[in-house]
Image (cartoon, rainbow, N blue to C red; front, side):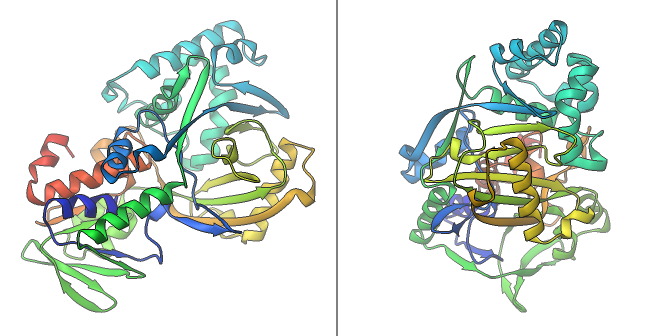
Length: 425
């Protein structure tokens, strides 16, 4: 989002400096060297609804780097694998009766056709699923996934939020029987590099390893930043840090404004990335509902983007206060690989070729019913200061497409704050 905002602000004729606390640009889309393989720290994929991504890539001259592949989804329930994600798979699924299957299929179909999410804004996802699909389908297909992603918040998640996830993936298909997802050739780093190149060519300045300690203000207007103990003057500031940092970063905000940022809760993530000598499944995404496996699923990324070896992401979402969050990387790798061996008993200890563990304390906003009313305005009470992170996309979930869309809007709003009145944000 920050890179996209800088790119569009430069296009509009502004002078731009980017301060990035990390040593690399790109945030959650950044890559790292995984034993000679350049890959995302946290997995990304492209859906056919991701128009802002396509428009930005066209503008940057890399539109031809989108690759589409036929993918599939599976479900592992109580020790057994089940094909999932199309009408035939649903009909063949042995764990639900015919009426439950019809209710589930109708709900998913109508969700992909829905265009107005506002009626779902104050609806609890738990109640929404139970109403449409029934108690049995909810308990079997959804409950454990919610429990292992949101823990104590699992019973209070917005139906509007989960609906956007269903619609985004559900409409990315080659046909009713075939899911089709995309990736950027070279990974998300291809887009990050193109943005950085465009920014520097236009005279923008990118400062890495530069942690901002304060956004300075005076008389209700932003005046600049403090970076490494040095004050720097700016006429406008766009902040894309996670909301939990905002209160400490902007002391000039009113107590009421700070309270709104502090009220937004986040789930952390420990994402285990494994390189294997053999596949785990034939699916890109495998949902897991098994009492002996404490993860909601795995992403077998090499079933989307081809690599010499099998690449699997094993995401552990959990509150930062959870006892497991502070465990060592070695413990997470051992547990995650043990789970993969339960999913595919043919895996042997020697099949684990490499591993990496990424951690974020603030990875997933908790979007409860009525969440829209909790989100502060992007244009803050301080003139010249805009703030947004991934929770501002609501009901959309985190992703590159919404990031670049918001980055563009924030750049436009530097000169025209009316942009946000039109967006009602």
